[in-house]
Structures are given as structure tokens and as C-alpha cells.
Image 1 (cartoon, rainbow, N blue to C red):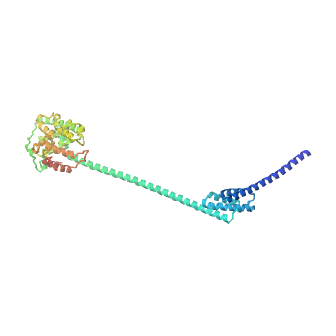
Image 2 (image 1 turned 90 degrees about the vertical axis):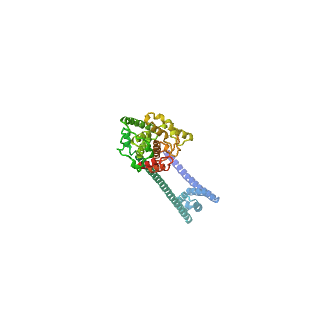
Length: 424
């Protein structure tokens, strides 16, 4: 037992001695490290390597057990810290100031008046910088918001302008369309005010279309000279049946002509107007009905022309000549007309482009040489054309159309134009 006791005692003494020696070794090492770092910090400061000096002095402070008890350490540390703070006034490094402030809290002996004054100056300068940055950010944000508001206002203004422009365009278009429709309606009403009576003719109501009344009063008791030379036409019962069939055939051919030339209801409108002019100018009822039928098919010659030529808006001289030849192509399309009525129909289809001054075609007839039916169709056709829609111009109103016809006495029989002015 004694032997075991001595062994434990020896081990205890050995361990105690070893521990004391280790503590002495480490204490000596930390002091040496602190001193070495202090020397390195001092050398770096002399070489104006202030960042290295700052790092080394902080290491010296860390390794020193009681930095405040080492005057040389504190003097060098304050000198280095002062220089770093002066440099930081230019750099305005907020993290460096926080770091220095923490070290001062850790090593109160570092804080002399110069150090504290420099720390305060740095903090104020950083605060001013931060405040300036905040103001710039706020200003920039306000500017961005203003720009955004301006963009939104401009966009809304542009959209409103577009909407207003669209509304104005639509209103103008609607107004234009309404005026156009009014012109169409007025023209149609003028041309079709006796629609029912004309229908009676086509359906066989050949006699007494206007209830036995004449229209001589419409033209201030004007009696047209050609009317005086025309014979009275009396229809027997057989003639009336034949005329009814003729009227239906003429209506069918007139519709065919209008479809081919793409002039809706042109033949019907011209024939109705020719009938009304005939009555107004003192032509007998029977002859007026023949005029009606002949006017229905006056443009039959167009059926012998190519549709591209008919619908062309601009023609060469050669094409104009070909167009004029349509009056010579009509006869074969009216072969259903009875011989006793043939002369009226022939005059209608072949001579409706003759002018009063002899400038027309195909025969350059003048004045009284032009048959009455050709003069009636010449005026009626021109009025219907002027009063109808064309691709190259708008529809003209009644007054304008009549005025145009009155201003061209070299083309149109002035008595027929006068009668037209009274009845439309």
C-alpha cells in the first residue's frame, strides 16, 4: 500500500509542476506576441502603411492581458486610431466607425479627447451622408412618381383624343350617310311618286291611268310642238291585250338590261319619267303608253357590248367609239315588237343620244329632226343618271340636276326640261 501511495504522490507532484511551467510558457508567449505586434504596428505607421498599422495594433491589444497597464501600447494605439479616424473623414466608411467605436467600448483607455472628437466628427459626417442619400432617394422616387403620373396623364389624354376622334369620325360618317340616304329617298320619291299608276300599266290598266285628268296645267298650258304632229292612238280591245303583253316583255327586257349594266331600276325609272313627260307635254294617252314601253328598252344595245367596257370609268377614243355603237346593236333585241309600233321603238333605241345642236350620234340629227321619243328619253335618262349614285360622284339633288340640264340647251329640248322641272 505504501508503495502505491508513493506512486500517486509522485504523479500528482509531477502534474502540478508541469501545469505551472505550461502557464508560464503561454504567459510569456502572449506577451511576446503583443510586443511583436506592437513593433510591427509602429513600423507600419512609420512607413505610412496605416491600414497594416491599424490591424497590428488591434492584434497587440488582443494579445495584451491588460492593455491599459502598458503606456507605450496605449500611446501608439491612440496615435494609430487618430490617423485612421482622420483618414476615414474622407472615406466616410461607416463600418470602420462602428468597428472603432466597439474597440473603444472594449478598451476605454483608448478614448482621449482627440479620439472622441474624431469619432463624433466621423459619425456626423456619415449621418449627413446618409441623410443626403435618403434625400436623393426620396427626390428620385418623387421624380419617378411624377414621371409616371405624367406618362399616365399623357396616355389618358392620347386615349381620350383617340376616342373623341373616333366619335367625331363616326358622327361625320353617320351624318354623311344620313344626308346621302335623304338624297336617295328624295330622288326615289321624285322618280316613283306615281309608282302605283305605272304598275297599273304593266298589269294591264292601260286606259285612264290618271283618272281621265290631263297634265297640261303643269306646264302652264304649254303644248309641245312635236305633240301636235303626233297622231291620236286608239286601242281596240285586241290592241289593249297586245299592248299588255308588250309592256310585260318590255319590263322583262328592261330588267335584263339593268342587271347587265349594273344600274338598278334604271329602265323602269326612265320609262316612268318619259310617260309623265308625255302626258305633261300634251301627248295623247295612247302614244304616252307606247313611249312608256319604248323607254323601258331604250338601252337594249348595251346587251351587245362587253361588261368590262360598260363598267369602265375611263375610256380610250376607240372604246368610246365602241360604246357609241350600242345604239346600232339594239334592233335584234326588240324583235318581239309588233310592226305597227316598230318606228317608235326604233327611234327610242337608236336616236336617244342625238343632241339639239347636231353634236350627238349616230346620225348627228338637229332640232326638229330628232323624234319626240328620242328627245324625251334624252332628258329623262340624263336626269335619272344625275339623280342616281355613281362611283365617280355623289348623288345630285333635284334642283342641281335640273339646273345642269337647263344650262345645256345645245343637248336637251328646253321645253322638255321645263316640263321636267314642273313635274319632279
